[in-house]
Length: 441
Image (tube, rainbow, N blue to C red):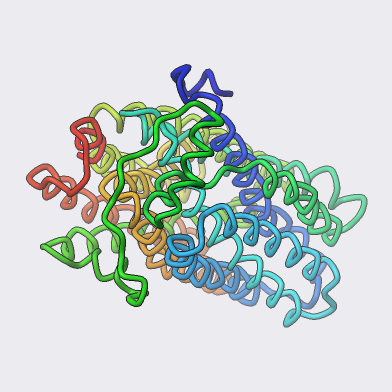
């Protein structure tokens, strides 16, 4: 895996270790995230826990509401206590919460489990992105983040096969028991994950940073200006200082539309395709193709963003996503539909990730987790709205309009990140290198 990142010999072991462990953590994040959408057709068919389409949309929104809480709080907490500790806590939380879902005897308990899982899922992703940004090879930050996010979609593919191979013979509860397995990974993460060198230096823990750097023969990052400990909101306030507020709002709005689209499609794709007349096996195949497209898209978008700018690539990708999602409302031959789903996965998932890449690159090391966390967190309002909207449209018998609504969300994100791209090309963020400026547009 380290060869994929073209790591230099100096610091290569440390970067490979950090990125590799983050990749595994995000794999489990993706499995837990997509498992609900993958087993939902089966739960609706057997009316498990009395679930109906509109109630299923509400349950999907519970998880994304938890992600909103996790994302909004995790960035600030990570910048204060460290990213390693927070990652360990997040993996533990969403694994235990999946066990609660597996044991639930009512919709209320199941919803509580999904909400708690969402808090862990929402906190892990921006923290992992911030971590790999610290260890990314110079000029390859967007590509490294794209590589990390392939794990999320590998988890989505795994969720489809869990639903296909385990749910039919053992029932839907067995799928959530599988999502408890990441608990076995927690001791490994706690033992071997290195803390962010930039975080250690920013917090004045120079001896610890020097020991870690010496162990792996890497150079310590330059010291950054430390925040006043008494001001816990200083990192957030910095997102609105010196004219940065316009860029911050543009990123938040783009993230809202992007995550509405991502989580709306992730939750309802199998069910919506079944409503279009496809069998369950084909509907789960769409999940696999969608996430395979996501993996390809991350690799392509990461390289393109490092060359042409992450916000520019994100804007183009959102436009192509909107076209693909709209086409899914049109009944086409199966082979053509498979192709459209794959291509939609290529563009949709990486379009949102390039928003995170832009924010991460433009942030200073001591403020990065807060910036990415709040961009992800504000976008989670869209993630809450997307599953609910899909459920309401499906319950009203307007499944085709679900695809249209998601396409409109993609167009809105295209506009907001496009404006951000034009503005960022005329601005120079503090603490950015020339190569990072290229990647941020």
